[in-house]
Image (cartoon, rainbow, N blue to C red):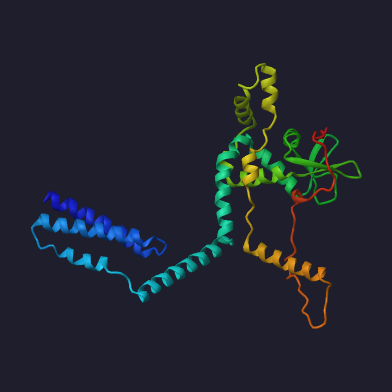
Amino acid sequence: MHETHKEAVEAERYADRAEQYAADPTMPSGALVYCARKAVDHAVRAQKAAGVEATAADLRPELERRLTVAEYAERESACRRWEAEQEAQERAATGMDSENRDRVVRNRHLADEFVADLCWTAGHVRVLEAAESGRLYWRDGRARQAARHGVWNGGRRISRERTQALFAARFLVAVRQEDGARVLALSPMGHVALELVRLNPAALYGTDQAAYEARFAKVRRRHKRRDDQKAAAHRLPALNSTARNLYRRPVTLVQQHERAEREAVERWEEEGGHCPGADVPALTAGSGETVPAGGIRFARRYSAEQPALW
């Protein structure tokens, strides 16, 4: 009885797995055949242990039979249909193709690994988001977020200490305006850091004190004097170079379409413009690209030493 029960349970387990593999066209056919054979073998043993006719053995010839050309073609066709349906569902849900969905997954792994090392709080993220809006500026020793673009006067106050720390760590860059204000924008490293933090906000510290203590613990072994340790702990560490090099910003299908339209217009203009009888490519309404302020390419060069804001 115990032997029969044991073999029957194993047969059922392999049969359930074979059924799952059969419903998934992406699974290798070898895995399905292996589970089906194991289910039959255990079923035969269970019947023999129970002293009944081993009718399950009749299934073995069917498992050994090779597929005909038509059956193989139908299986491949079903696999392709299933893959196409899955891709359509994923695109509808995410707005991205498979390559960019993979980018999102890889970026999440980077965020899980490196965001905690930044030792930031939510306040640091708010400063970078203000810079991303294109309205963060520095004037008279204070950081503010302007009420609207181009008006570098007044607006909401932004943490002076956090802004200084992020600028000193090169997450922000400054561009001097004619009226003396300095507009603060995201550096390339700041862009990547902000995107990674958004993927893993749980890695942020709850208070500035907790973030400082985390930085202090990291520098304690590298600095002997207490004052040197404290000074190093007040500085924000740079984003790990591995994260900077491996991060790739995902592009949605809509963005890809808009880029293709812009490139078509640019090619048309470079080739001489309108020709009689040729259709003029035009951008669809609302397809103009909006570039975040942090993504501005600054023509000026700045020295290796980051200038101070204050």
